[in-house]
View (cartoon, rainbow, N blue to C red):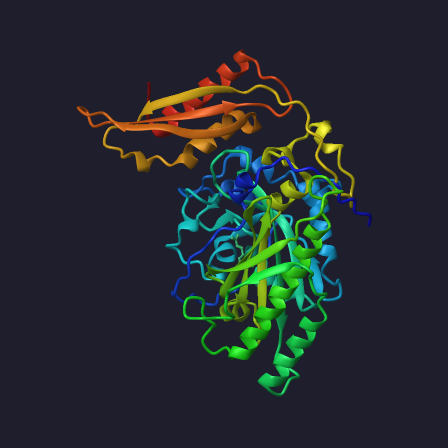
Length: 461
Ligand code: DAH
């Protein structure tokens, strides 16, 4: 595979620092029962007809689930996926494919210790097909079956994931993640010492990164504890293998990028580790890379919770897992300035990339945008917080799909006499592909206004 690393960088680090990627989860203490993991299913007629009060998937999102961007080897997200995959030895890591983003609530949340009171499970954050099934919000949804099913001690997954989110240049309700995991079994070893020696032997085989690494984190401490029952030396050995693996991958990718003027002296790459919290790992960390003046969060990762291995049917195993948002890295590497472009079907986007090659995105002309404001009174007695931004985001997407660049709340007030609450959102209509006509925007505007009235009973102002 030939890799051409030349690229230009149009996205500011500030934008990228906010882009979709790894979401922080809080630890929870509730125990979950070990129920059988349902087999992965294709889109079923059942999902279509089995709707209930939880159903909030829209037809726009449903359409995105069929796009399969990773099926096109010339798409920047596939090119990046292949590059990252190529850093992991094939005999050690199975590449697993999960084309269907519809998973059970068990797979997406419960199998990972994410309890029912966790904010990420709310209807405002997640697309529900019905109370039992969701569009996966992260590739971690496949951890248990991946730890269970593969013949190798490691696995890698790249797939589309979905989250209800705001609309701007770096947020899109569908994006892509990569998940990886690695395990060891004490079987065949007679003591902790031997298991630790085996893990360390594997660590020694990882090519050492030249990159400057800042690691002030401890292997574990009270705020980022090892798991009860896990031997401290085993935890340290697993953590080392995890950190060296990800440092090797990121070092390899970033050190090969020509930043700006290729003849200018290269700034040394810096990577840092910080403590994190996820319900399915302990201890946990995030890896950040210093990129054009700011720290960019890349991976969430950690030592896999023993209960995940229990659910996979291998309670004796130990190991690690990581998750990475692909769009963020692809925007940096290819210089892609707007996340909507990944979904563009315009030949000027689609035809400019070649499998195996990281090339700089050649922008096509920027078409002018037009603002429209949507101001309305909420139903009497409703507090502004009862209307969630993401409710409007989905209405806007249903009406205008990718013709919207951003949606922002610009005003919120309570009438002094009537005490009614008013909200005003500003929507920027802009196409990546052509100039939008006023008449066309008026139709979109009307449709958004109608939906607001019908679905939320608001009074337009
Ligand atoms: N699934 C997490 C997210 O989307 C990322 C993540 C964190 C994945 C830690 C992991 C992990 O496998 O071990 O935010």
